Image (tube, rainbow, N blue to C red; front, side, top):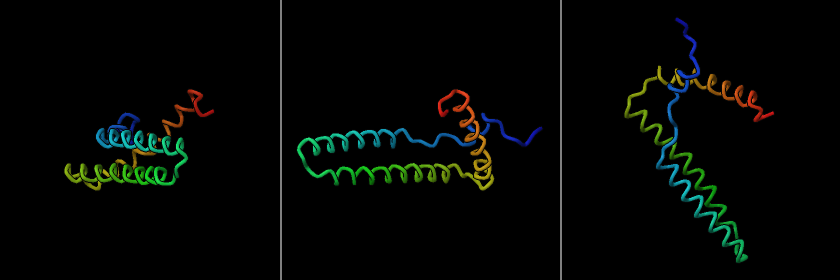
Length: 108
């Protein structure tokens, strides 16, 4: 039996990294900030505040995903071996994704 991971095994090990709740809140905040920025541009107001809040929102969303992932790992009791498996799986998924985009002609 080979120790090399297949693409499907690598995807299973990496798991889902997004939360539906955080994604929904991200979309709602993005729409709200877009409306605010559009209204500010139409009325000639300063755009610095909505654009600054958008950058802050992006950071909050990124850290929320990280926090949810760490809490999930802590609750499941993921070990160092599991993290090592994830590190081994990441290049496989990345290389297969890159190969498939070039084969489909998306990036060329």
